[in-house]
Image (cartoon, rainbow, N blue to C red; front, side, top):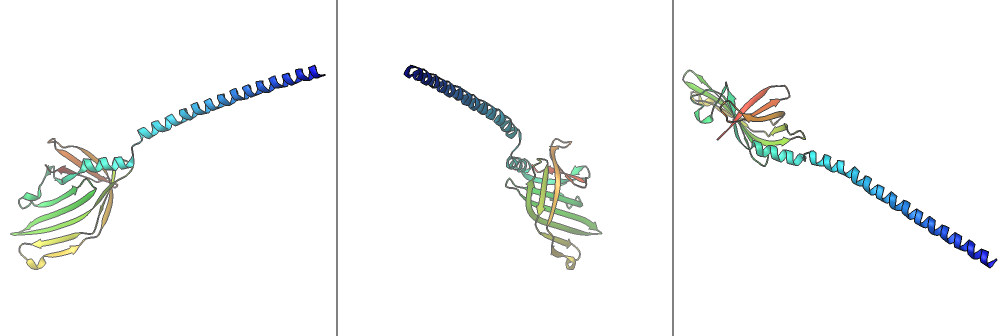
Length: 198
């Protein structure tokens, strides 16, 4: 009896050892698979992150690209405020800083007989870029509009303007003379182009 009990005990011990080894191998295999699959799952996510631009980077790059003063194109040519007296018409400009601030100026000058009648508007605001790097929002705070008449001082006036906000698609390229050109297209499809001041 004692010999048989010893044999049974040894068999059970061998079986227990075999099961422990088998279980360890299974667990190691499962752990290895999980680790591999985890790395495989992580790799596409990391790749997608590298291909997706950070919105903050998009906005920062957009503001730096547009920083400067831009004059609106008039009738196929660009005009400058410095010569508006000889070039009567409507003149517009945006001055954009790298921190996203904008100053807007507009001037309309017409001649009435020997008199010059001017209407000028100024306001400041901010420029913000959406997730789409080609979309921007231009928000202007309330500003002022001034009217002057060189022949009738009593017609001169200064009044406040309302705050405005508009969305645009923007494109930066070169005009026919090789100078930097910024074109802003409203959601209505209307486009205006500006030249950067040197």
